[in-house]
Length: 63
Length: 254
Image 1 (cartoon, each protein chain N blue to C red):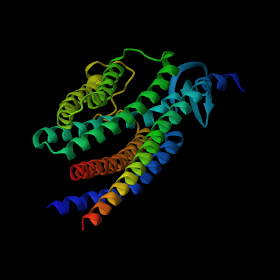
Image 2: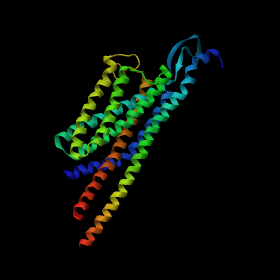
Image 3: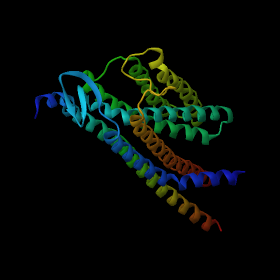
Image 4: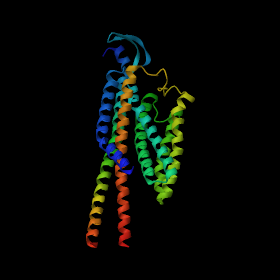
């Protein structure tokens, strides 16, 4: 590579891993939160469905 | 009146997924524009200038500044989320309605996610530019305090068992935590450090080709934050309903 261009772009090559790292880590934090949220909603929906079933059974017995 | 409120909630839930997708798309567009439309900023002067793409380049080109296009929008969204924490906290203290406490908690969760995103992106920029992982620069210090306050909010919530007291303490703490937001936002104006630029000002600190990707990224992260807020709120409201049914069953069992 031309030495002048190498000097101009010297910080570009060195910074690349940090820029990539910053973008990856940011989206990773967001992705982890999304996964936790999706699992949380699924678990809660299951719990609610089981409870509603129990309530319906209880109501059926009382009638 | 109640039906109208439920209708609003359902409508907002319906746009939740499209908002999330739109947010991601906006971020992709911002990412592309930050590397194509926005030029590389100039660093230290080089010994011999060179002609690149018809332009005389006399300085080193800085790629690390590209982090800024996502770093600043996530920081702004984290602060905006804390505004909702404070507003819902104040509404709870006035009305004592549980729904406000739930909304304040969810808004703080979103704030925490975006605070972490801000911190990781900022840390990597700082490590490259300054060669250190941390320094007590005014904006960094005030934002670090903000992060500790947000973490402290959840520690406080977990430490108090009684739901009424927990909600009250959390509401007060959320309002106190929000006080740091304007301090953090204005600190670059009050104590200029030369590192964090004053972006929002009347003459706009950024050139249009840099401002466009920044604003698109901000719009994208706002959409994502809103979608995640609605999603988490739905979970929390279902959880509250589950608790109510459990209590009812226990009462009937007794």
